[in-house]
Length: 275
Ligand SMILES: Nc1ncnc2c1ncn2[C@@H]1O[C@H](COP(=O)(O)OP(=O)(O)OP(=O)(O)O)[C@@H](O)[C@H]1O
Ligand SMILES: [Mg+2]
Image (cartoon, rainbow, N blue to C red; front, side, top):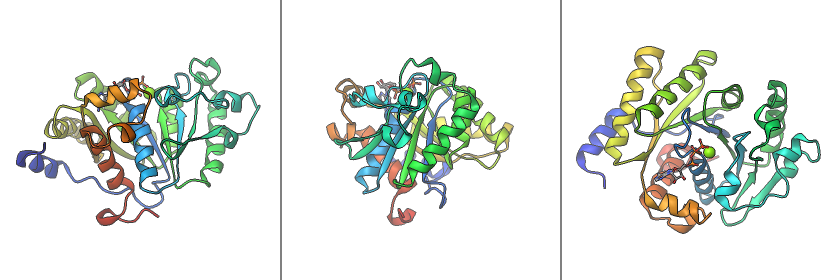
């Protein structure tokens, strides 16, 4: 539950705003530290976009340790591995995820070839994704943890990167490190913060304030808050059941928080129109 103090603090850290026109087609979800909920958020945001009536594609860009398919219980016959083997084109790897109403391009977990992809191959893959994106309103990229070359290259190739952190100092430090690297090579890159697994909205806003202060003081940038997602036992239950939370528990706290973020970043109404 949000109380008056939460609203005051939320106002002081800024209201999430819609992505600038032209930046909303490709959005990456990245983190620095692993295990902060990127894959679950990427799935749930994509699902929320589909529920808003948008044609959405989720690309598993965690090249070495893909697990979008695991969280969704998919058994992909065609994946990124087959694309890189030259067996199929990227559009042939897009498969419908019917329970969510969106499409998925699955990765191949444990593939050394994908994990160690040369920069030129990543550029080619990104160009193919650009071509495929013509069929979609929005494309979300679930990236791997860390700040390695592939993560940064993919993040910098999109309009907006949502950097996910939780309340732990290590997660905040790693989010800061990722922002520093992205900003140092592309100062104009649009970065938004999502605080996941927050104990309360107020705690989440405070975590964001801490990160914002560090970015402002040492990097000279103020990445806006995209939103706070509360810690919620339903998330683990949904992942265990390999079912999307917006189908399984649509009214739980975490599901509502993600739908709110999707609406404010991509939606209609007071934040603009979804075209
Ligand atoms: N809002 C939340 N509330 C409770 N638990 C959560 C929440 N978000 C994520 N989790 C838990 O965090 C775990 C890790 O989530 P996920 O695999 O999506 O993280 P990740 O950042 O993609 O990890 P990796 O860096 O390994 O790719 C999930 O198994 C889930 O149990
Ligand atoms: Mg992941």
